[in-house]
Length: 203
Image (cartoon, rainbow, N blue to C red; front, side):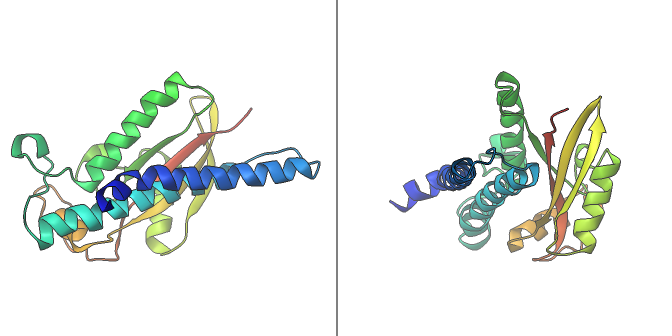
C-alpha cells in the first residue's frame, strides 16, 4: 500500500493543485468576474508539485536506499551500473517529456529546467540575463522566489526562479564528490541552484 501511495503522490498533488485553481476560477466566475489564473499562480502551483515529488524521491528512495541502507547505488550512469536515477536526472527527464508533450498541445504551454551557478553539466548554466539574475537572487535571499518577464525570440514570457535546496545529505555529497564539480563545499540546506519555470504571455 505504501508503494502505491508513493507512486501516485505526484499525480495526487497535481490534481489537488488544479482542483484548487479550478475552484478559485469558478468562484470568480460566479461573482461575475472573468475566470483567470495569473502566470505567477500557475508557476507557483507547478513548482509546488515538482518540488514535492523531487523531495520525496530524494529522501525516501535515493537517500534511504543508497545512503542509509546501501542496498543499491545511485549513479548518473544508472543504465550501465543498474543503479537508481539521480534526482537531478529524474527532474530533467520529466522536463524533457513535458517539453515534447507541450508541443503536441499548444493550450498547455510552459517549460521548466534545473539550472545552477555552479553546474556539473555546463548545459545547466544560466543562458539569459533573467536566469542569471534569478539564480543569484535565490542564492542571496534564502526562502524568496524571483519573478520577472523577458522576451525571447519575439515572445514575451513570465519567468520564475525557485531555489533548489539540498534536502538530504546525498544531494550535497553527490555534487561535492563529482569529478566535474566547480564547487565542493555544499551541505544540507544550501541553495545549490534553481528551478526556472517559463510561461508565455498573451500578446
